[in-house]
Image 1 (cartoon, rainbow, N blue to C red):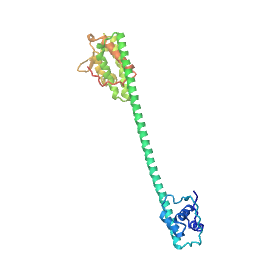
Image 2 (image 1 turned 90 degrees about the vertical axis):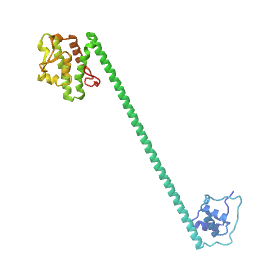
Image 3 (image 1 turned 30 degrees about the vertical axis):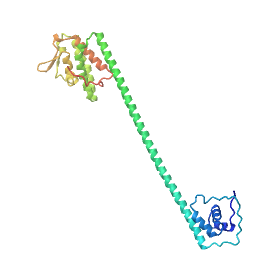
Image 4 (image 1 turned 120 degrees about the horizontal axis):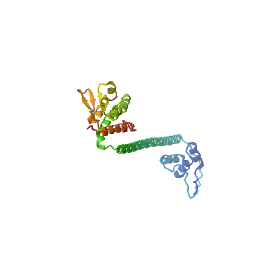
Length: 293
């Protein structure tokens, strides 16, 4: 196969008009090398062919000698110019189409990136929530273990002291009731409650050590020191009543009759107060289910 031979003068004229070598050879070859106008007409008819700019190959040589030059008329020049303009416009349309397709692809790629980012952020948020829930559950389990250990230690201490659970239940309820104020206390009230838990044992211990001395078994409710430290707090007076103290003189005094002095109950009260004040979670354990007897 070889490149077909075409009229050289016509080929030069087509190239001078701006057509490529391949297009010029193809147009002359397929138009029969007859004239410049026939070659131009062939180009017009086949300008959209996919192979128009490919040099054709033929199995034989074509030897044609032109006998006379072909003049380039004004009409031929106009056709050539129109062909070039049409080719340029087609090329520009293709470029714009490619640009639009590229812009669409960039927009789609941006959307995919944003969606992937949102998915990753949502997954990270879910993992963080799951981690926090797991931490809360572990903390709750740890607090429950401490509470159970604390209760076991109290039971062991009561057992060593020979104090029965029945004798301590009412006193412990009162101790817990006094302790409830911590759930809504400010820092100042928190200090007052802790002070009450330090003063209450003094009243009880005085009776235990001196059960026959009446002044230790009688408390004036209007006493400023008593009111500030115990009387004004929730459960303070109730605690002493469960220890055996009674209101007398129209509620002006708390009085513990000698015959009602119960050393087991008083010692249980001291044990309950000590357990509460030494508890590392003093004021933090839930007491929502406690009811005073």
